[in-house]
Structures are given as C-alpha cells and as structure tokens.
Length: 234
Image 1 (cartoon, helix red, strand yellow):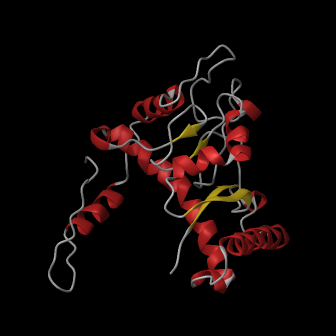
Image 2 (tube, one colour):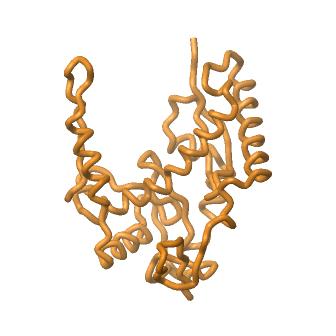
Image 3 (cartoon, helix red, strand yellow):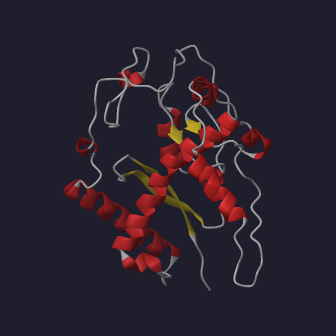
C-alpha cells in the first residue's frame, strides 16, 4: 500500500522555497489543499495590488493569484500567449522540485514510513534545499545582467522602471489603486497583461507551436496516436 502527499510550495526566482507545507493526502485537489495552507493563503491575500503569484489551472483566479486560461479562451492568440509566458514562470517550480529530488535520492522512491514521518522528511529536505542554494547561490539574481535601458543592444535581461508600480518595476501599463475591488474568479490584472501582449503583438513562439503539432503526430510503439486536446492558434 502506498499514498501520496500534497505539497503546497512557493518559490523565489533563485529556486529557494518561500513556503513549503504538507497538509493533505496526495489525492486532494490543489485548490482545497491551498485553502488549508492558512499561512500561505494569508501571505498571498495580503500582497499589495499589482503584486501576485502564479499557479496552474487547479487554483481559483484572483488579483493575487494568476492562473492560465482554459477551454475555449485558449483559442484567443493573446490569451494563449499569456498561458505560454505564465508557463515559463511556473517551470521554475518544477525545476525546484527536480533539483530537490535529484539531490536527495530517497525522494525518488517510495518512503516507507508513516504520513507524519514522511512529511517530516520532506520538510527537512526542503530546509536543506534552501540551505544549499543560499550557500552556493547558483541561481542568484546578482548573477544576472540588468540594464537601465528599455531596449538592450545585446539582448540582456532588462527591467524597466514604472512610477506606478511597487518597487518601481512593472510590465503593466498601470496598476490598480487602493480603491480597486477584487473578486474571486476574476482578475483585471490578468486582462491588463493580455492587453499589453496584444498591444505589442506578442504571441506564443512558432517553435513552441510546432512542437505541440509534432506531439499531436506522436505514436506509441504499438501504433496508438496520442490524442492531444489543444494546439495553440497560429
């Protein structure tokens, strides 16, 4: 007999855990588990307007938690573009789990302990993961090159100051003020990002679309064609 554990985690850009908690069995829906992670939800809900985290479609959309578009919404090329760019951020979460599992090889197999002890093992690995990254700093932001210009000549990472944004940095044309109303399942922040993508004609890269098309044509060894439900609009 075996069982999984639902881990709710939040990472920084350098792959360190900002939050790591286990409060539910593995079969628990992420959105339900997130509501049980009181400390994490309190932190996210207290973020100033204009600051947010990103998650997958299992979570409920809000101004502080942006999730991908689903269903027919993905047929819009710029909503699909939003999904692509959001996925590039979410990859960091997968990388963090990958590094931790690769470092602590016991996580690559079944943990034959009680749920309480397995949770303690995971928490210990998460703390050690942060300790190692703090010491080695392989993904530290200080290793990046940042310019003050809006357009770099050599394609380096750039941050454009924005007077209305928290900390002076934003990709949005304007952020909501203190009188802004928020609703679960609605995000004007997400729509503002989509509008910005459309204004700049920024769409999902063609190479990524081609890879999805190739996946549609993938066959197993038995000759069975993998059925993919969606290809991004070209």
